[in-house]
Image (cartoon, rainbow, N blue to C red; front, side, top):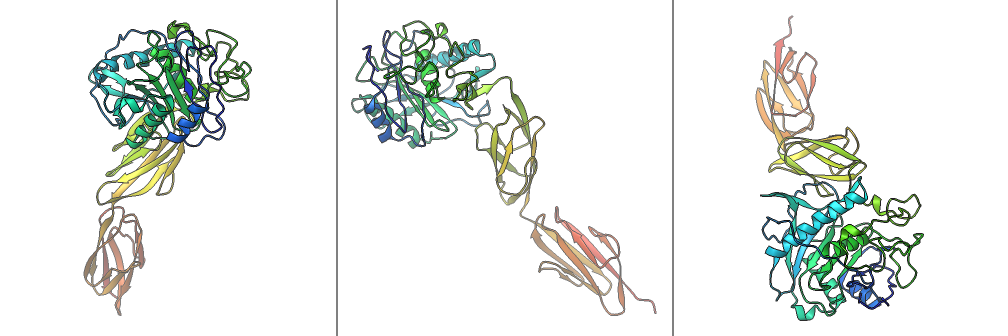
Length: 460
């Protein structure tokens, strides 16, 4: 956490917090492990109080230009389908809003991390939450003004806990997201570069302290902390550092997860260079390369959703939010829960393809996979006419026709019509939605329906 070569040890069972230090300090951050299920302000403070390890950043010049406008919401749908890394700019209540300039740095860092990751692994890249802006695809960058002034957010525990609480209050609490926050406010120690914490199966938070650790790269801090939210370095990895540097590797000084780092840029670091600790290894312990927050470039699969009728379908995992037939692309084997929203006066009749039933559709994305959703009006009108002497009755109450009747029935619920000739008469035939001369006929009610029963005298 500080420049001192003696970092704090970390002994928190339910949540691990990663904190960065300046050049020549120690890289810190424990991976989320154990039975982590919840992040709260109090657990954040407790974790920091128990100890947090330093991390660093290296210098980077802002070369990209972010062309968006300030937004306090997560723009949807996500351009890249799957569990996202969402970027947030946060300031205390009395902080100067510098998003217009610092957003360029954040966009540059996002591009730098993406490019660096591809040099380390041609099959994976972090799934940044992207949106279509006037200048093309860029990070979906949200802004957050916190309730507390900077003077109340000086200590690491207070800042990290307050950021997490502010995100949750603003609606940024998806269990499918990792939130990468650049906090542009004062910190009590200029050597504290960032913090990170994560439920290994859901929400994660990595915070970069923008006003601290001058001269080191925010891209390196962000990449390091993001790796911790993805589970690096897991307990028991072959080269995991001993106390107090657990959560890091100690076999190679160029490893991004080494417990100390200089001011060299992110491009000078390596992602588990031996592929034997936390990324791309063949062992039985957790592997960050398998994280659902990475795009698996070698396992992309199109998923086709066909919508008929007025309605929309959205997936629980961000990236699918369609009001018309659409095709999205996912990591193979991604599990989706699809929910239907019927239009006004309509209902979901049924799912089809890879789904069944009429509530939530659970599907696994696989090659050739498709799903259909059929929406229809709540009711369709059934009109029955009678020629001659006789009566037509419906299996559901409503139709007792002689000579004509019209009733609205629930759509797509079949109705059985039964013809009853008067004495001395017989059913010659049906017409319209019914055919033949049998007394009973079933209509599917998949549209407004008309049927006619034709009775004639019995010849003597």
